[in-house]
Picture (cartoon, rainbow, N blue to C red):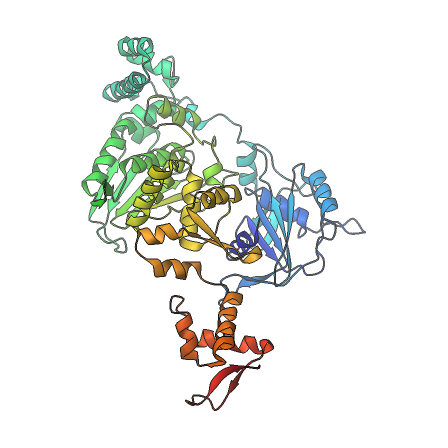
Length: 563
């Protein structure tokens, strides 16, 4: 973790997986005093609670509130962990998992960050035998339901369970034929001719048996969800419903169109796609020899996002449907059940192989409804950023729902063409989601979290490094801003640091002996510095012999430098 990542962390609100403490002088490591009494509010206690909720950070040496002027917490400094190797050793023995402790020295003071791992599937961390969890500011004993959910994570997959009282007669023959059609299409693409002949000629029961979604005349929830009759779904799994709403204005309360589906998903996904496509808008883009059609909603991304909401939602003990809300601004897909244990918004792109309904997802992959389990979300992020719309997000996601928000409006068409141009000219392939996340973060915020990729981008002249040490930041290269004919924006993005600004003023005074604020302002035309900012720089140059001579606002008054 570097200074940029630290500042980014300090700008975040406290949550289940992040805790901030002043802890200037000391903070108990294992929460045990001389009398063998236990204090939950120790590093061990927070590690147990945060680890049980997916892992995260305990940050020591910072203030509690986010400062309005900086947008982050104040760094107050800490000496809480005086022997880091011993603390790591003790915490490993207590937790059974490695804990990282990072110490960062800033211009303000020293900060210590404890990076806490997530619990192992099917088990919990315990603080001297007690499983803890966060409850606002408190560390409390985990409730029975949460504990049971974690301990039962290794239980049988819900989508693979046999439905009592249901038979193959609860399935729609037309939907089963659609399953067969999808499977044959996928086999054809992979030239599996022998298997194709078998699938084409087998009976419906044999087909379902080969997919592993029935047992004799009994059906699984996967079979019901993919091919169930509407009446059977209403009777056996009524929450297997998807609601679609369209609004011409995303802020209006009423909808302009609404549709509801409770039927075999092999039909539903196509009908939802048609509903989205009917309201899709095309933006033609031509630059040189390149011609692109950028749609508000990339249908592949939409299909994958809906597949994920359908396959990963929690069907057990939840009555809510999947809700899709679409407007010209974007699309929001709300899926019941919340994130799985161990998955957070921060690690969700790396959490491959975590499926709430494994048989359902694997069957969808097998018949070609999804391309490959585990890469769908990556592709959604890539397509959205590559089309110049910015990043999708998971705003409003909580323990009850996962909410995926995908923007539709194009923020920067030139960014789209620039990536296409660079990929073509330099033979660079942008096919990893992290590449696009890095470039988007650099374009918007000037920050990077992947040192290896940033070195690669700098080497290929895609990105430029500005500043040194803790003040380093990044901008898209000069070539990008020349390409979009915004050279002044490049200069503003590059933005001289404060010391460099002071040096420019000093150089001017050494050359001309005196100057007014209006003279200095011309030095920073591309920077758009205000009079107040320039006056502040001049006052801070007092130690360099810079002083103000004459009455305030007088035409004869100047800033000067002692010879």
